[in-house]
Length: 468
Image (cartoon, rainbow, N blue to C red):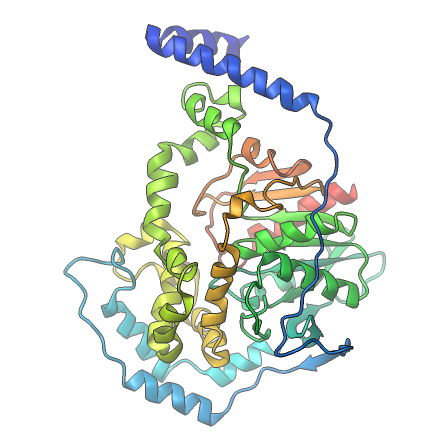
């Protein structure tokens, strides 16, 4: 009754023209809703496909063994890094520009000074090797992954979980969350597999054009099968969200649950309708008060804001090799390019700070370790090419964008994520949402920023699916 009264008061508070427009929109919306409800939900899959991404012709057979791998470095590698850092040419920033023009060069000099004189790469290599690394050959590429098992405990159910990173991150993003997930959670613990996307870090890059999220998803499904898992959980954000979603669409019978901290909704009339009605009658279109707070004003928070932060994407989706030349040759250029994202994507308000707020959530050792994974492997250009391959056509018209996801899904909505997706929008694609959580803090890199919060949400989601 209270909602009806609020609806009545809101409606009659509008002028006559607004009432007429709103009435028409509601009628059309209800008709569209009823039509969509009349269609039976049928579990559909997308084609698994096949591929060969190695150099030259595909051989008749491929080595399917899994080999241990160790991250290594050398004095020569470090000396080359120092020589390049010492030859860096800087440009003075504009007065009071802070991080609004990108990575402020005054603060960049401080970060680089730490990198050159205090950061210990050999020590960080030892940190990387604290978890077991492996490589295996799939579709012509050497695929790198870490595989972390929980300690043996009585009466413990161990569940396999693959976590997939995005750009400009790496498998190292998950190092703080791994000990949390391998703990015993009232009888549940996770066996975690974190692969490197081909072309990122220690996974070999494709030698052929066309390596997109479908290819990555198929390779990771093969990896899980090779490890002996017939059913497993998935978790992802950024590109990892798209890849794990594609995995769930290709083989839904293998995916026990899908947990995401980023998801892209299906665009269309329902989304447009909710944007028109949402600010005035949010509950009518499935919005909560928190959705309204995060979404509106929509153009400022979700259009203009994205435009200000997506210049990199347009470059990488068109001419990655050109843009990549500079950052692949200059370690300082690479650090500025990558670390700027860890500033603004963690919290847009960091652009107002002279130091970009980098050390509010991260240590310089952790940030530079991620940069060094890109630098020592020379993988920045191949990582950028992933944008080109996925945006060759309209990504919203691909078969995966038109196919629902029916596996049990959990969504963690972090407040400082680049774009907010309400549950009602997510349900247009993800048809079996078991958990949707408004997270209290955190941005685009939650496993790196807020590992405990993300771990807690993964655990509660899996317990719901497992009915623990």
